[in-house]
Every structure is written in C-alpha cells, then in structure tokens.
Length: 138
DNA sequence: GCCAACGTTGGC
DNA sequence: GCCAACGTTGGC
Image 1 (tube, rainbow, N blue to C red):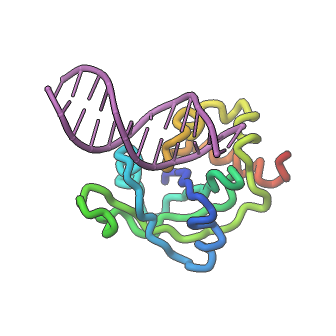
Image 2 (image 1 turned 90 degrees about the horizontal axis):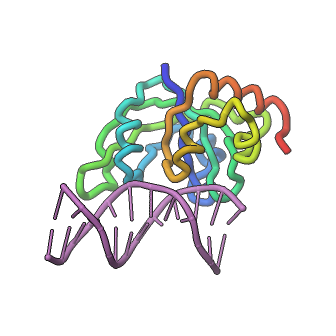
C-alpha cells in the first residue's frame, strides 16, 4: 500500500467538504507528474489532505476509493482523476512550518517540489506526521 | 528541439 | 498582493 499527499485550497474544497460528501472525484488536475502519480494509486491507498494557501497544514486522512479514470472536466482527454473518501480528521493539524522544522521530513517530496499538488509520501514520513498530529504544532 | 513568453501555484 | 518557482505553449 502506498501513501500520498494531495493539496486543495480549502475555500475551493476543504476536508470538511469531503467529510460531508463522503466521496469525491479529485478533478481538475492538469499537471503531468501529478497525473502519473494518480495512475499509480490503488484502491485502499491512503493520502493526507493538505490545505494550501489558507492554513498550510495537513488536516486529515483520506483513502483512494476508485482508481484512475479519464477526467470528464478535461476536454483534451489527457488527464485522469481518482475518487477519494475521508478516513478521519487529524487530532491536530500539522502545519507546513512544523514539517519544515522537522529534520526527519527534510526530504519530503512536497518540500522539494512545492508546486506539485499530488506527491508520494514515504511510510516513515507518514508515521512521523501521524505522530506530530497527536500534539498541537506551534 | 529550443527557448521566450506566458500562466499558475502557493508561500510569504 | 507580490513574486519566485516552474510547468506549458507555441513560434521558429
């Protein structure tokens, strides 16, 4: 099983929106690298839900509940999407600031490629962020 | 196939 | 709101 991190600006679509909807197509991705990662995703994979711009923090966990299929909002037919479902809200959000301050997370893909909205997370990184979410960060 | 122009993301 | 980083487009 693989771990991922997926970004959304909360005023467009937030983790609370996903808790309400129960299942949602992650559409609108127009980046080839992100699309490649979505094609690698399997049902049952877990992903962090990250709020970009506002909040700048990991707020929840979701699961991939449908593997990749063509994005109906893409007229060119080049891009795909996956469906996601909420698993749980983190006890405390983990801020970007806290992630940057943690040496164990220094090599995270999301730090190396800030603009990539979907990125893989190593199991060690996943566990570290879960651990951090047990306590309020800064 | 190169690269300049342009558009977007996302932290600050 | 600004702008750095960087991905994409299109002319050549």
